[in-house]
Length: 321
Ligand SMILES: Cc1cc2nc3c(=O)[nH]c(=O)nc-3n(C[C@H](O)[C@H](O)[C@H](O)COP(=O)(O)OP(=O)(O)OC[C@H]3O[C@@H](n4cnc5c(N)ncnc54)[C@H](O)[C@@H]3O)c2cc1C
Image (cartoon, rainbow, N blue to C red; front, side, top):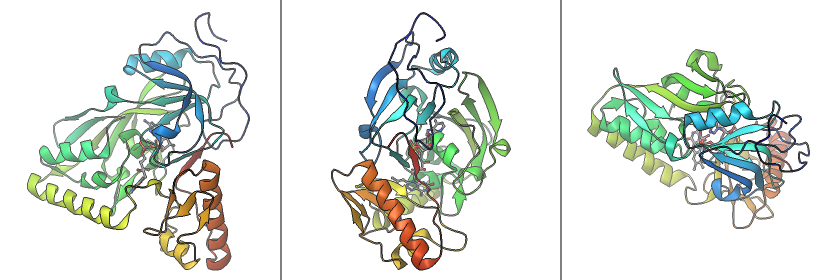
């Protein structure tokens, strides 16, 4: 306990999450905040799969100072996890221990800087970033049009499409560490590889600078339209889903292997492998997160058995079973 002010939430913290699980969280969080702090906040409405449990605490900071002040007061070891638009996330049914931080409107900003650089808040969407780039005549960021997440999620996941990824365009990012310290990390320090970064656990990306090159707004707009149309045709965009489930193994496509293993359309409870795109899982109605994750594991098992390839999860799975 690190002060008199604050809220008590009792003993929690069963083990079992891949992410956001720290040691020693006793339920206390400071409550002298200007943003919104919610106890036992259901996360299902905030993620694309529309499944899963509640966060012990959900914090939606009013601004950067609110966030750093809050984190600085947290007990060491309190689990902290950032949430974007939940477009690459399975939140397990037992909920997420500790604090989930969601950057809302105050962080959904994009400003044009010199030399084809965009200064983006961590909560800005791919559509906002790419359309601001188009309007400013900045080419090279159109690929973000098709990725339905936030800047923070892109930086963490090294989001990419059409042979481009965040590592190609990121100059640097501002990150708040779990203790509340604000640091600027150049892209080279993020240890980027395919759909992976070495961003420290619990770190929250609050801003990022992306660099493109001068381009013609009409051409960039046409490219964005092509991307949107291609997505519409090939992905279950109006379903409750989590994007690509597995990383493409070197030299192959995850969807091809899932298909070859006979898993297209496979079901577990309310979860199903998409008929439209075999590397997407969908919640057909009232799937639990356990249904979705179990289905994913069954697909991995069948692919390993029949194709000899062990697929690696791209979707982040967080929280308690
Ligand atoms: C229909 C569909 C299509 C998709 N297509 C693509 C694609 O083409 N390419 C691609 O790369 N991805 C794709 N995705 C996956 C997803 O959009 C990306 O992974 C995106 O980067 C996730 O962003 P998010 O903000 O929604 O993050 P979330 O799903 O909320 O979180 C994902 C991870 O990022 C972390 N995170 C989120 N915000 C922050 C932050 N501010 N600071 C630090 N960490 C943070 C979370 O803790 C978690 O570990 C698709 C998803 C869907 C549903």
